[in-house]
Amino acid sequence: MKNLALSALALASLSATVANAMEVAFERDSSLPLIQLNVAVKAGSVTDPQGQLGLTNFMGEMLLRGTRLRTKEQIDLALDQMGAALSVETRAESMILRGSVLASQIDPFLKLVGEIVTQPSFPENEVRKLKSEVVSGILEELGNDSTLAGRRFNKHLFRGHPYGNPVLGTIKNVEQLNRELIQKHYDRIVRDKLLLIVGAGDTDLERIQRFGEELARLRPDSGASEGAMTSAARPENPSARRLVLIDKPDRTQTQIHAGQVGVRMTDREFFPLYLGNYAFGGGSFSARMMTEIRAKRGWSYGAYSYFKHGLQPRSWQFHLFPASKYTPEALGHTLQMVQDLKAKGITSEEFEFARRSLVNSSGFMYNTPKKRVENKLLERTLELPDGFMKSYGAELSKVSLESVNRALADFLRPEILTITVLGTASSLKAPLAKAAGVAEDKVEVVPYTEE
Image (cartoon, rainbow, N blue to C red; front, top):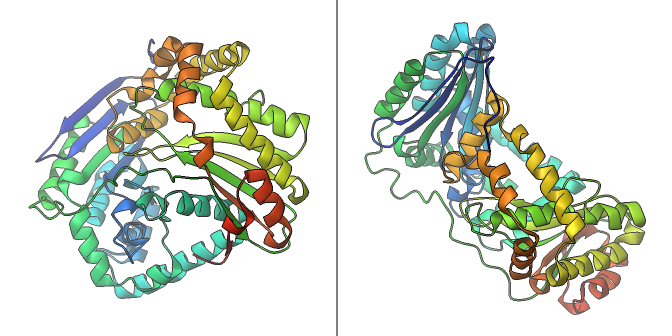
């Protein structure tokens, strides 16, 4: 697949390894006087020790709350004076400092970011404040049915596996964090071998290279990160279908999540499965789930299926949110649709529509510098080949109907799906057990307040 034309831009790129094993990937783009710069640590929430869930996210947020030279207020003021933005995002296998700044302010911005990354102070008063904020965020999740249902599905699909741990952690674990634990975790994972710089914008490539070299010099590995488990073991599917009912009283609408362990993006069957999933439950209103669940029956405003990805296979799952009175029918019908998808695959009409839509839209995955930065972050943090995100169009063009249906038949395991439903247990337990084909005495009922 040919790259999109970028004749209006003066582009150059750098992809290099600086001192030791630190990586830098930067694209020169002079179309606007702006720079996007991300400093990522290739270690995320899967590195949280048992009993310290949320530690990586907490440590990342604390980086912005004080250095040996500045308080949080001084950091915030400096960013405001530069017209810059800086935030933290924690994923399962990476933690990312996301920054943007005017090109004219790149030097003071790099100085500030370098100070934040290499000289954090983790002040006690800010630890106390952040605890309160994170706990409030967790409580907000408990109050949001959609967010809570997704969080609980992950927990029950990946029982005991780090992929099932919430990025924010639990209230109990967060309240027990302290400065010593935060400093120790920082020393383990913020090291040059785990650091990555990815960005784009109007600045000299050599300037970003020098910035990377300085970070590597100030955070040498020295063996400290050798004991940091930065990726999880391969998760396993359960041996039988499970139904978990998250009991939240007086619900007029439910949240249904069901699924299984997924695939890696580098697996041989990824692109056939990606296309097959798009036809079944992708974002199109023509997808089979939307047609059957919303258009024909009006059970749920939305009905989707999708993959989540990681260094290991994460999940394939479907999600719908019907009215409580339609929930058993909606679940039973969707489970039968998954069974039919495994047995019969998608039709030639569904295949042609999905392939045409995905191939034609693939260029939009990398048509801006911002998207290309995000793609590079994915490629580097999930150990994908360089240019993988640009390969979608070409790879999907090679996929055949036969390969899609063969991949679906091999991959789907409807008999071992983990099913979670957030709703009112007293009225739903028996009909849901029947719809799911699970003995009623085997249905797990847990209160929505349980972490």
